Image 1: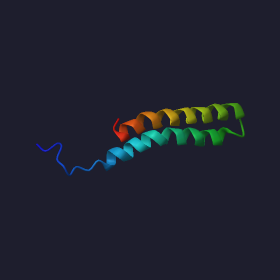
Image 2: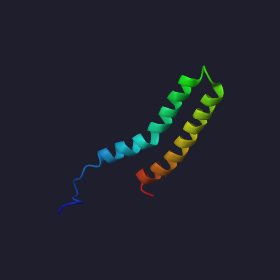
Image 3: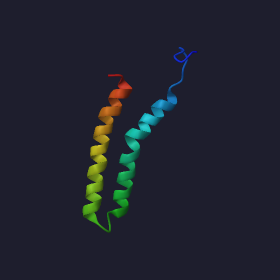
Length: 68
């Protein structure tokens, strides 16, 4: 059983963490731009949610990637 062999490849894990960090924030921003002409207040709330999600995810996932 070689679960932690020295030549393991963790590229998929890094890509998954990056997708979790940036994916929902980008999706909320795209939805915000789509709704911007019809309802500015809703678009503003979506932009704020995207920014808050990005700040929090960069802090938590960034710490996981950095190894703290």
